[in-house]
Length: 532
Image 1: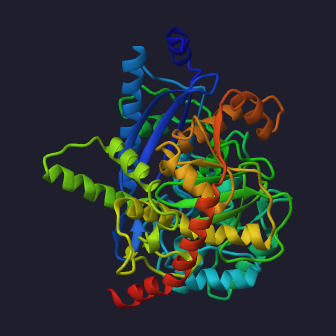
Image 2: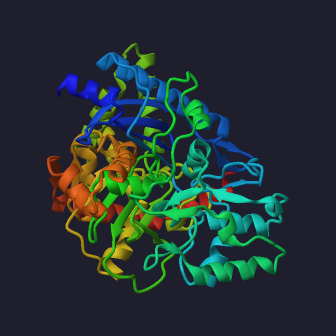
Image 3: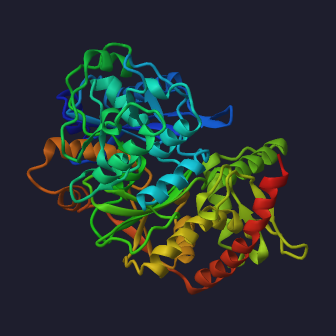
């Protein structure tokens, strides 16, 4: 790494900034002209469960963004002894979809309802039937229609409906826009025209007019932009919002704001047809870029798009590592009470490695990691649950393997539809997110769970913040080249990926696990019904 070259890049304003607001962490990543991460800053946060709704307060959004940016500045000064004051471009991403309505004066009308909520079943079911197109519960249109069905007082005052990154982008630039990948989780997209589906818009407007709504859907949704489009510039007010010290200069161009699904595709070079990726962190989802339409509508499969509008089949599951993290925290507490201090990453590595010593089928241990409802298994709420037979070999190895299998189980059930019913073909899946931070383990078990090779790139840990930074760089650097070519030739040409093929013992073991898991869903549903 040429320190002087990086200092020049930063001082000349040629570095590019990407910030992603994830479920548990806000991360800022700075990249150089070669797209390499050169500095970062982060801020930890958690969702709140208030009045039956998973939410984040918007004050916490700005506190978190400012802290992550402040920590980025500190990282730059420590590493390169220069001040961070300007950028060539920047972009913002966040956890996908959800519900953020505002009135004509910019006042928030309802709490931010995140992707994690499963409170829109009636709306999602009715819209799926009306459109003949799957509408997941977390989508913005499901939240909007459910609020209409509920007769919520704020509905007549809605002037603008957006998502978290769309809101932040609006505050920083004044532009009410959204990237097409995120737009696809607000309302269905016509990928032949790269716009909201016109027929479905008409159907929705007619439906809600009967219920007394006066607005037109296209009047309240953000304008759709594609990767490479200019999405406005940082205003003076926006610069102060991000950096209250006043050191950040206004005028920087911003790329279209995208959801973490889109940035995950970019960060794993999975935007071309027949490519796919798995994002595994607080939630888990698998995405495959299609070369042809699916033959049927499946409530387990979401149809979204790449940041350039290509159709994508997505299996989204609400919980991945949350319960596993809770157990690791418990083990750390036990060790601390015993007078043993263990470095957190080292504890994760040790426990993950132990999982590889377990029986391939976990010897009958089943883990339900449900912190909220899981549409794939038709569960409306979550009850974290560990189930085993009395004669199970209850070892640490089997326990940890069951925990890791539990993070993948609902994904496997959804992916079965694509692989078995739709015969979707794919050479490998690119993995990224917290589950893959420990080398080999998550990757190996995922390959066995899906019976598909799983690759992890050297950049897997950078995740969506790097992905949105790449989209910002593409906007200012592209030379009439498609995003797929730009990523392949200018970003990933020198990055290596480690690929793990599925091991037959792992495949057979997970197949046994998922059989028991599927039968035990009835136990999870009983817990939901009886444990209040």
